[in-house]
Image 1: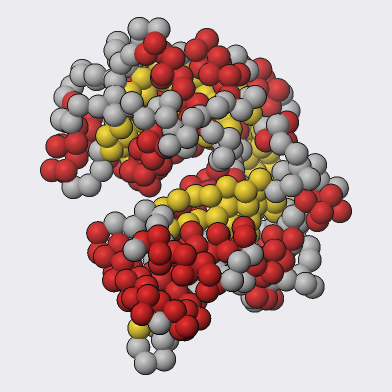
Image 2: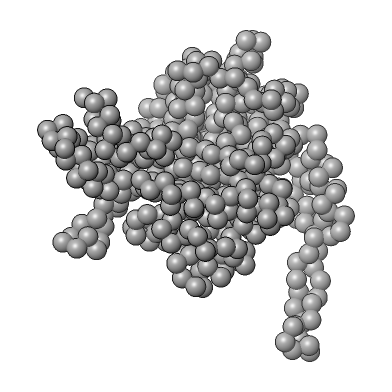
Length: 467
């Protein structure tokens, strides 16, 4: 267990949240939003303002990220973090467990409000992680989850409300109204969405590009909207820009851990045990065992190949898809270049992310280079030397699968790396995300990349540690 030391920008974030009980912290993934909130809660507790906290986020974030973040640091391990995840029976039982912080996914908010009962809310602090999911809130219509949350947002017991996101307006300024309502009940941007629209947005009639006798109506943002909205939100919203705090000459590398559960974990462990048994008995066959790591790597990514020709697969989990969804959300509409090594990963993720493209096709590559697709999936073996033009719109690379070949990884990163960004005239950080199955061969692959040791040595050492 390590001691958490704040980065230079963390005190600024904590001070903002202390000075503004209802506020927003806009900072990208990897900037330490979770640990910042834990440090804030720790300080409040020392000041005698301790009280139950509710953290809302996507399922994976609620189930894994927050409990792990608290357990990882010696400063915060005293916090009892209880996820409210699972079946209705399991959620009800979790809600009765004594804790300091409860975490729940957005989909279960209506259930939680019903469980609490009309007019009841025991939480003193509420944190909306990835608050972009509140953008659909409307006072009269809109999303069911956000409306349920709105019923407790301004309860007398709720002293603090904090929105966390790295991309508050990925689809434009209209995304801001729903999120901001939970901070001030519409005082800044309008008490209703229609009032917000009427004040800063409008329509104009545009002549058809082909037939000049035809026209159509096009929505527009009024000229004064951007500056006025920014001015109104300036006091309660704090932006932390990575380029202000990091050396842009080096990529910012972040590891995103996912945890396998239930049958998925049992299947993985069974395959891994067989692999390690062979290594223990016949060390000279370590390279043969390395071939078995392919099965483990595919299981860590969520599927395993079946059939005589390995031409089909069985899905075991979607943890990495959920992790990629969080990264894409944090990208705020920015392009994301995703590396895959298994055909199953490509097929599953193309299905999970409508509008994404396969960069092995001419059409997919052309659309991604032109900035017409937010997510592009590429195999590192075919994305090395000679592939250019990706850096114009993209500075985020994600490894959804892990693989032993370091050169392929290095060349894949170079497609959008700092040198390419500089060549394109962009002054922005490059983010590299590794989605890693916890306690799986994924971790051994990254160890291989970090140390350049042989696959055989890495596997033998891993076998000894597990033994």
